[in-house]
Image (cartoon, rainbow over all chains, first blue to last red; front, side, top):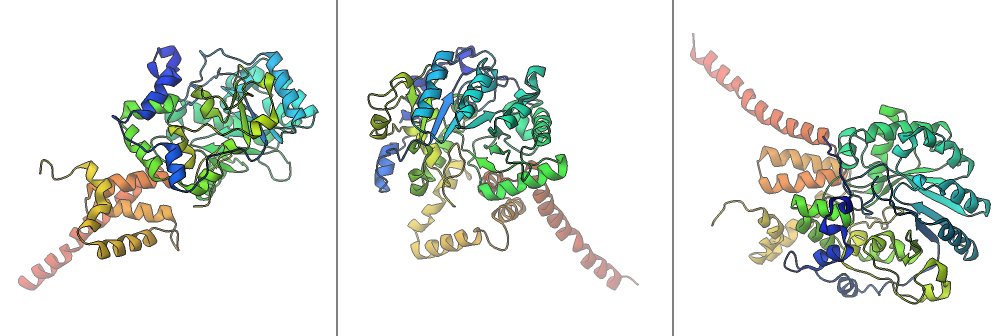
Length: 352
Length: 110
């Protein structure tokens, strides 16, 4: 049975403060871990610098119809922060002028932003590929969202959706009661307009992240399981499965601490450090933009209030050459992206 | 010895090499190969290990292979069925010996 979760902010929890989270991650009295930068150096991995500007990831707001136990954004129905129309327009201009391959729109549930459809339409009309991190349940949450699958198909949006497990019990444990059934309903609606169906060109990838203090298993094997079970039991299709490790920040950090799993999880991440995964981390070709226009190396740094290094720290002062010369900001949470086969918004990084 | 079993000892398994390194090195190399993907998948091997852990009632192994099975994508039903297999074999191992008892009875009685 899953219990509804309030955001850390709404609960008035200390951990809502990014500085408190960073203090926990550095507290040697709780567990003494080597500094991430030191581990990189010990394995001969040079400090991280950008390779190119491929993905512009926009976190357009923290409002969400769900409040998952592991949410690294601390999103939920009570969060009202949203990117202004003026800043959205600046993001569109930056994406176009700097020839980003993809604009990756996330939140919260980005579809709840009043300018969401305008943003997608503007981006795709200028030929920019758009990816939307859709939580699936938003599609069935309210009749005004029921036509989202058609809207996505019409604009050639690449949909990336969380489904933490192919079974109801474990999915609802992480994301709240009824989530699995609503997600299955939404997936049927997406399949109906061609998403996940071979030959249509409409792509939906699912995101698996462990329902607890675990590392994700091998992506290829899990993808086979998801495909088999979703096809046999629900008649559903999707394109690829993306495995993402839960970062030890925000509500997942709160879960780790309150369940007594924090020390073992951090030790597991550190012991599983993989230099090959470290070289392929997503921050090397991504710029993440916060709802207030601040620039970050990734969405996790964004949640920890760790902006990019260097002079170009806001979308209104976007300077591609300065950003290409920056050093990527790392901290103890980065062990999450370098553990085992590695983890990124695009899934597993290295072959195990 | 305050406790016979301490969860913290699981992480010290590798230290058995402190007392006899060559044998430990051979054991861990072999162990690693045993659990690599082969004719059986890594998950099948993890579920076998979980079942054996229950058969031999090793708390360290139950701890380690519950986590490992979940990380390999095993569902709760898969893990419980694996434990039932172990239990069925353990129960069967006792019951099948009833044939010895029955043989003895039949030999002894007129």
